[in-house]
Image (cartoon, rainbow over all chains, first blue to last red; front, side, top):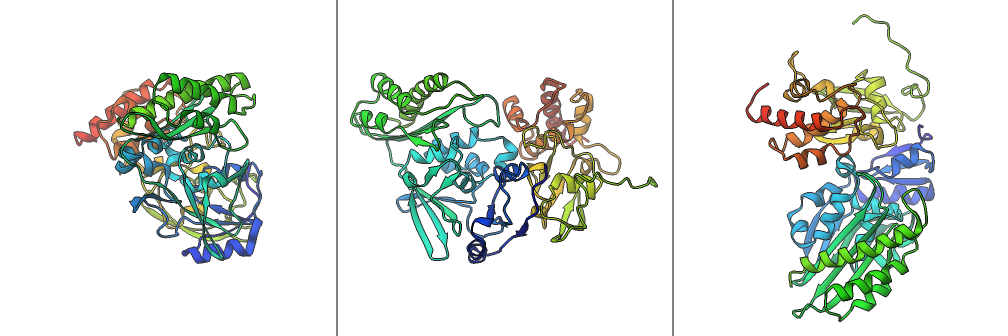
Length: 289
Length: 178
């Protein structure tokens, strides 16, 4: 189907983009890669009056370490993470995401900012970011504000972003020795949404005890969620099969999957257990201690 | 050709007479086209209906099959999941842009030689997706080839001959043939 008619603007400055968003409120939609938005428009599930194409905005695509943080511009394309040596070397959880998300054509256009703002419950990026104390920077008519990732996802397709705001940057704490992470995605085929997904980012001390761990779960709730019970059961424990099996069981109980054409609730719960254990094993192997 | 210009179907037509049309300039296969277009017109419909380049196909229209794949500034994209206005100021390569002066591109020769197509519907898309890979890597592993075409569905071939064709094309390009 064709979308309804809309006006189209392609601002050249961030200030102009924010101005258009402020003037139009909920009647405007931001167009970045369009790999989620355009299918929605073609099905007329959303009918904005104006599309704000932000692809010309300068300085919003970058992946770099600065100070104590890894900083990511919201307009970074998924393929940028596949190709980044920094990401492959120090933040392999994000290479995992970039490898399993979509397909090559989707990865050429789709952006991390767009994926996060779209807030699908199965969002690979959203789930991976929950495994960090991530900060999302939003810019609006009143300046910039920082949204902690734990407060970003409100409901299905609903985030803490105001209609006048643009997500511009994502920041996570810099990787330290002893850190390791992984994102594992169960899917029926290339390009499919996650049946379930598990993200783990952890830190091991010199004795291989878990100094910190966060676990994100995809497609088992109305938003990506954290398995906080599993996390709590792991802190201070020695990384190994006993602790991981326990945590995986807890994660499967915290998950809230629905039966649908990707699988029954029971199947998804069982897979959360399997994938949580595997993600913990991979993350701790990558921690190199 | 002096064929009479067929009226485009109303479902996807009327793309230039509506209000709110933008004038865009798009480079396609090395030529510049300046046209008015409504913002909601998909790039695939602009290419097919406005530019009459019908080698790019609409398969599923739901962003799954990749039959609509073109190269945008050298990168494979699904033209059914882009608006024509987004292509303003950019360069597009369609399947029609590969052969030069009547000579087939090595990848086209390879698909011929290795039977990489049957009905041909997916072929323009899969060729361009593979070409993006071959332009940066001319001896890709089978794994890399399969990943590069993983956004393109083929109902006929079972993919093996496509993979062989792409590998052969890489070889030809490496040796400077074609």
